[in-house]
Amino acid sequence: MGNTKSRSTNAAAARSKRPKGPTESAKRKKKVEEEQQQTLMKSSANREQTINIHSKHKAGNKQRAQNVFAQPIDMTESFTAPSYPKSAEAIRFIDNALADNFIFASLTKSERRQLINAMKADSAPAGEVIIQQGDIGDYFYVVEEGNVTFAVDGNHVGACSTGATFGELALLYDCPRAATCLANTDCKLWSVDQRTFRHMLANSNASQQKDTVDVLK
Image (tube, rainbow, N blue to C red; front, side, top):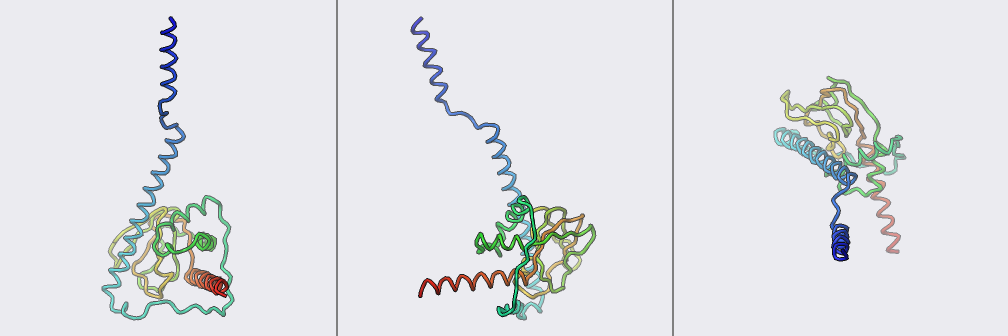
């Protein structure tokens, strides 16, 4: 009888030491993380496709041989970056959309937050041309909702949807838009212009240089 009780106690103890499987909460969290990763990968692929469109168009256009870099920023000009109110959810959404875009890779956390604050809500009804090929553009967009298609010389070359970005090269260069971007459905967008972006970077660089000089004194 005593041996039976001892064996039962030992068995219970052994069961308690067995590693417990993941809880339902952990499983749900893992599933959400996997879905977010898949969304980021899809957004990255869409952005890479957009960049390739720019590159191909650049190679086939002799006008691209001209200097396309934007004019230097006038640091004597008074400029205050705009700040548009956003929900915490919107801030997280934009931050995730910017996360793997090469143009914003060198931004500090503070600079990226300032950029997010400066982005304003925009919209485009189905059928509206958001960007016209050949125009000199200066806006960058994040797609919150909807579907945007890309066309070069009238030929469909790609599309993007929620979480994707397009128009990023306009933040750096004064050059003709490489593709026409059309709202295929009603779209909700976030946008920021070149002037705001470049002033923010210039002010940040100037501040960093001042800090360096102060340390060296």
